[in-house]
Image (cartoon, rainbow, N blue to C red; front, side):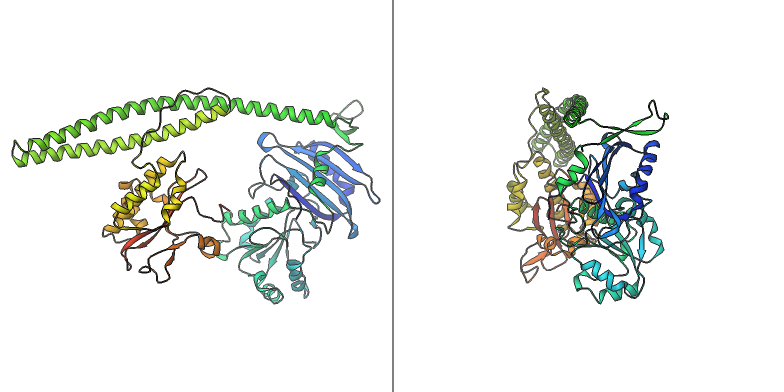
Length: 579
């Protein structure tokens, strides 16, 4: 496999009729006149056959700016056809939510086809003829195929989701309708791992693809979900940046760069109007060799843009820092006030207990209960205030670090408030001793230790303890539903929102061996005779931040052990999204 272009590149290699060479410049000029794009220049390189011709264009601004090149050259396999090469570079990676650049470039009116197998890039074709099954089977298995191939069911109600998909992937894959009869005929010619299903959508990536799965599918029950089509679109677009197509035209990353970025001798720039042209007409002038100046101008513009962006970011960070500093001071005052209240009520509780020796027992108990209730109320409020204070300190520390990177001074920051546990080892020891409704596996302490030392560790410690406490209360109680139902009803008592609890994993994780194995942990033989069990249920300790910690548990409260088992606590395990 050749070196790969960046994911910001959208690459097309297609074959087309010779009318493209005769008429395309007129189409491109109309797009220029309409303000759809701006032509930069045109050029040509003489070869033994027809010259290689190119047009460089741009459109959009800022985060939506695109630079593109269209190249037309001979097709070595056919004297009646040409090859059309397109590369479009954007500031961000192309996705299934963006339209193919071929529409902006005016190429959608031409019948572009795959450079080797010949399937159409702008239409979904239907398989016909007695020999079509054999041709399709060869297309799926042939080593020369250079673009993905999509097979979709022959049903009309997919037009909406397929329409959006085809607008995003025009130029990087071919599509064919698959009837049940054609599916049966093709499957008789294919090995088992490549066989089709007429009720589902299946994408075949080109042979030699380095993806984990050379075929991707959308099952019948998920055909109308745009997210599933987006997954297939992004896989196809990502493949386009691998384009080498040595069978049709020997391309390398260096050649792609020469087409898009290098000036050619005799390049002609486009200008609007002039002394000898109408005011809105396009005319061409020979461009001087200013490649060095052009590079310097590009670098100067990039540096200017980066400086403007940095100034904007500094101003925003300074405003956020000032606001957070005010909130931090307010929270400090609130914490001191609540601390005084808690201490006062603790003294009141002590005085009430002492008074038990001097007053009637009933009156003393009442006073002690009142003091204890008030103490617990304010202690809970104090805990919330300290949690808010920790969060504000973390955010202020992030803002300060960001300012430091930009060379701006920051105010001194007070140290973070202490938490009950200094490390996850302390938490595991306390949970093992106090939470008797849980069975914590011996392997948990090792993976949990990797969560220490992070800026978010204090928050993770609190959330993990809240989650373990909720599991323990569920295991010790007599609740009729499962743990997710318990959290719906009682999660607020433990600071555990229902959205953080997942009853199971995705179908992809459940059915992929390496993902499932990562979630299989040792258990007592009393729970499973094999000594191992799959733990799909989990609690999200944090939603983001890169580490995204997870705690996987197995509910056996109605089984032989009568307890909840903890199999894993640590960074997010491998999944289709994280890998």
